[in-house]
Length: 76
Image 1 (cartoon, rainbow, N blue to C red):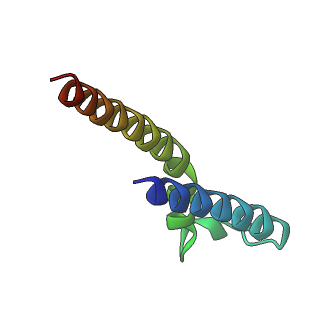
Image 2 (tube, rainbow, N blue to C red):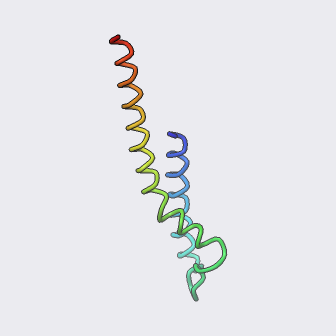
Image 3 (cartoon, one colour):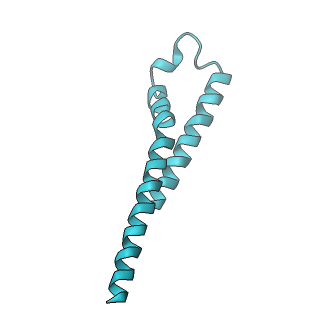
């Protein structure tokens, strides 16, 4: 799950940079961002970081539950 978070954050940042470069090169002129690969790039950029944040929270909760179960098993 941690590698998934890392890949998702890296992909979102790469898409963010791609939009900046694409805008600089004029890809957004004349409604250029509405077709091709650009809708997918915007989707990953928009939802990637919040999804990574939720995955980090899920990772923390699962780690806390695992540690709690391990501590209970050691106490018995």
